[in-house]
Structures are given as C-alpha cells and as structure tokens.
Length: 211
Ligand code: ADP
Ligand code: 5GP
Image (cartoon, rainbow, N blue to C red; front, top):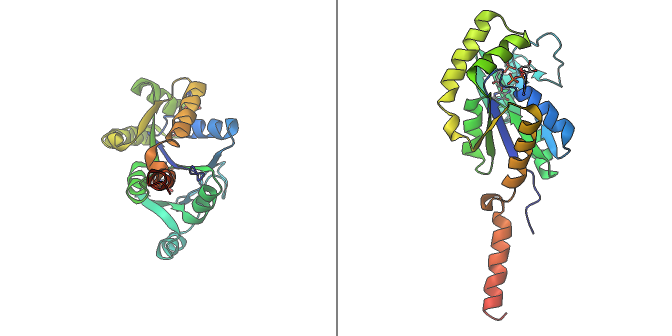
C-alpha cells in the first residue's frame, strides 16, 4: 500500500522574506498540515504567546531536554537556543499530517542528515529591495537589528543550494499555492514510497515465478 505517513517539511528563509505570513496562510487554506512549535530560550516579544509562538523556557530546561533526547534538532542563534520537540512531530507524522518546521539553516541541514525523506524549501523574496522594504515595513526591529539580519541573510545565502526547492514570495496567494503543490507532489517521490515499491517488487517476483 502507498505510504500514508506525512512528510517532514522544513521551511527556511531570510528574516523578512515572509515565512510567517506564508505559513499562516498555508495552514488557513489547507487542512493537511501541522506546524511544529519550537522551544526557545529567548524572551517573548510583545504579543507573543507561550505555547502558540514558542514554548519559552529557561536555558536549564532546554539543556535538560537535550539530555533527555526530547529534541529532534536544535541550534544556537544569536546567543539563544532554539529546538524542535520530538513528540509532537512524530505523533502528527503518524497521523498522516505533513509537519512543517520553520527553522534556520543549521537546524535544516541537521534534519536533512537525520531524515533522508525530509523536504527542504527556501522562501525567497522577489528582490533584496523588497526584502528591505518588508523588514522596515514590519516595524518590529531597529535599524541596527535590520542591518544585522540583512548581513545574516547574506551568510545564509551560501547554503541555499542544499534545499530541494525555492519558492518566491511575491504574490502571497500564488506562493502559498506553489508551496502546497510542491509538498503534494513530493509525496510521489520514490524515496518516500520505499515500502510500496518493495511490495510491488515482491509480488512481481512471485508472479514471474508462476506462484
Ligand atoms: P519572516 O517570518 O520571514 O521574518 P514575515 O512573515 O514577518 O517574515 O513578513 C515580513 C513582512 O513582510 C510583514 O510585514 C508581512 O506582512 C510582509 N509580507 C509577507 N509576505 C508578503 C507579500 N507576499 N507581499 C507583501 N508583503 C508581504
Ligand atoms: P526569532 O528569534 O526571530 O523568532 O527566530 C530566530 C531564528 O530561529 C529564525 O530563523 C527561526 O526560523 C529559527 N528557529 C525557530 N525555531 C527553531 C528551531 O526549533 N530550530 C532551529 N534550528 N531554528 C529555529
């Protein structure tokens, strides 16, 4: 039988490219997705809610989680830890949901190493001018932080070739539709249907021997 398990989908992108906006729209439009909520040691920003945006924890609690093997990946980003809790991801994949991890590139590459069938997608802005416009327009960062994030974007850009696909977030609706199509199509890749291929091959062997 064809594989009914969900796919692990990693979504990364420069700060301000629109990942959060695209994810929100994807989850509102389609019902086969589950968004993983990360654990983080940074302080919540105004308006952020514990258990919705992140599980905000102390450094001690985070280190305990690492020791207990409760995270599938984690990374240090600007002096804080960020990590993906294991239990939720496993439950949702088993339930057939495609699970989305919105994480930075170091974590993405660890996922790719650990889960050969994970799909890695990078959300790109249509241009750098538009990226800057969005970062400034969001109004949540100072000019200095925006500068840091643009510099970080330049560093990250080196690793984009490790991703399976890029999607350009120009028209939001188009971008969400395209991301959904990529994920649906990825279900049909041979590497995600090994059991099905094995079953067909076994049956073929029997049949060709006249069994
Ligand atoms: P990220 O999560 O990648 O840091 P956000 O989702 O916070 O980015 O988006 C950054 C800013 O760009 C927000 O103000 C958002 O409303 C805006 N934005 C996102 N997608 C688009 C789009 N397709 N067209 C125009 N503005 C967008
Ligand atoms: P922010 O502090 O702006 O919310 O997030 C900083 C960066 O950490 C972003 O690039 C975000 O995608 C990334 N991030 C969030 N959660 C995780 C996680 O669980 N693991 C990793 N590796 N990165 C994460």
